Image 1: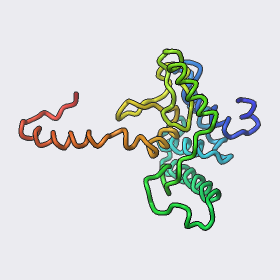
Image 2: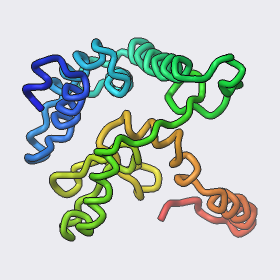
Image 3: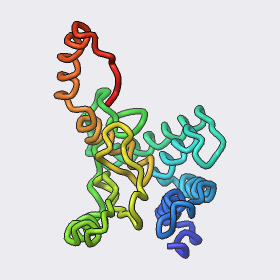
Image 4: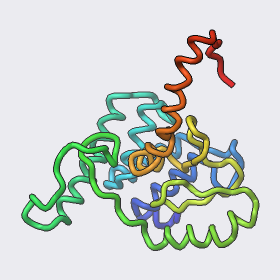
Length: 213
């Protein structure tokens, strides 16, 4: 992978960036956020959409680089524009065949575009990992974004959703994509909101303290 990255292979550069962000294959203290940002920037310069998105989130969060919200947003918009251009270039003519209208976004900003099918190698990794029962019962997890396929190399390597704690992601790019594709619905189920609304009047009458469990 390093040889491919040295040859300016965008996907290899981005994969190495994620490895640096997570410290994959080593300890949590082995992470190198600045190196991850540098690799992401090189992949983004080559037009890698996920690297553009990741770099945008890094800039917005100040993750491994000085925070710059406006510049981060610009990269996120660029990532979405690349996605839309790819869809339009592969869509049938006339353009009326392309779905129109402002819908829930696949990316962080812009138009909704259809989700791409996972790469065959990603599907293979998911099947292989599942067949081994989660890496031999070691408690390792896969990135919850179905189009990714990256497994953990040590326990708790990937970050969990801070709201529900039931999904985990290798990168902010995968988290952003999976949120728009599926997790936005699963993270806060309608039943949860209905229960909260039903409990609110009861708490007001009973003098509940409003504390957290």
